[in-house]
Image (cartoon, rainbow, N blue to C red; front, side, top):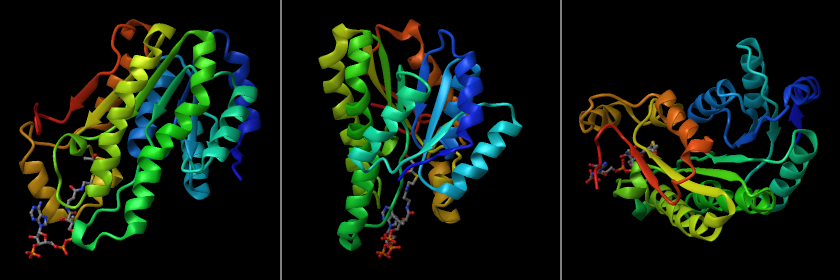
Length: 263
Ligand code: CAA
């Protein structure tokens, strides 16, 4: 079951402020990228709602956000579960409002070379990083079509655009994400809905910091800009794609990787 954290107070006050605010749902809000995206969209004036998986992380995140002045209701839900996602979206629609902007951000890695990769590692990464995009988008799309407005922003990866030792599962899922983007973009282009992909390179998140230090050092050496990206640098691009001004951009895939991969 999902539950919302400290939502009564936050939802109530946010709801009162809601007037004409567009609602943005960010999945995987407690991670580095998710947090930066939530904060940026909040500062942009959206009514931001987060989704998270682990209770302890959600609780700590919620408290930290409140202390920093961000009123962001968050909803616990395992986004690999299609029906649970449906319940979560319904609850958000009832408590906060229809979702205008969906940022499919939640993702995990389970790296290891293919010869040793277990079915479980393959399956979990595909479900978390690709099926979740279907699950969340499928449950918001018809409402967006009804309102003739929507912004769907899918977070992929540089490693979907090139090969990366140890990431067949991750690269397959993230490449699938952009295939999804392109086709859905075509299907809803005349309904006021845009669908785009952002493909970050190596960003200073826990995910990247958990790579062994010697491996990470070599990765940084391969980035022409000479450093890891900042989470806010991705959030700025999300902010632009979420805006009304980006309405002619759809089906695009934005590389933001410090020059590590160009095509
Ligand atoms: N290219 C070629 N060979 C490599 C290699 C590489 N990049 N990395 C490791 N190897 C080789 C080693 O030399 C070694 O070879 P030998 O067996 O001949 O000695 C072998 O692979 C290592 O074997 P291991 O048993 O240690 O391999 P493993 O199955 O445990 O996998 C790994 C190692 C976990 C994949 C490790 O190499 C690694 O962490 N690589 C980085 C993966 C990476 O970049 N992940 C990105 C995470 S962040 C993210 O995904 C965000 C994003 O979107 C960018």
